[in-house]
Length: 112
Length: 110
Image (cartoon, rainbow over all chains, first blue to last red; front, side, top):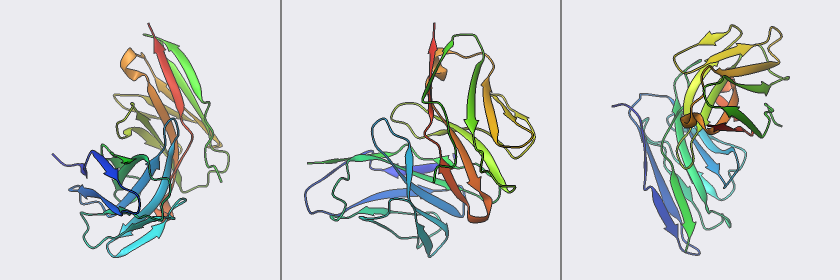
């Protein structure tokens, strides 16, 4: 089945450590997105990419980095500069024009 | 800036229609309105979208006002499984970017 796979489902980070969240899609979508969701809050855009080898900062990009070397993959690195990384992270993708956005099942990141 | 405004919560009796409003007064001509819902700790699920005409699918109906400044998502016969947070989203087609609203927590009660 076509869809978006996020891994791992749960992730723990130690102080000063960088961690990378995986996002893979087999929908042949050009655009991919990363969102952060804090408890009881809505989704906030971290980064998005409209095409391979190109990406733009969203509303809360500080402390995060991304790459888009392949159409299918859009990994997110939470760096040690992100002082409050505990949250639910959601990856999404969309095709062109009016096609809806599809979401993965999310990764829950916690601090040890 | 916020692109959409939704009430924080609503109640609905099981079996009745749920009408969820969304205000998008600054919407421009090339922006679509999308609706998603999110059940706790899962990824958002797509429901429906539209540009200016009313739309209906197997899950819901979308009513967009003539001036496009607001819309209403209608779940015709709400069930307990429809309890979720519903997000109204405006999409800037030119930049392929989605703006999420704050969402409405719909509580369907028996």
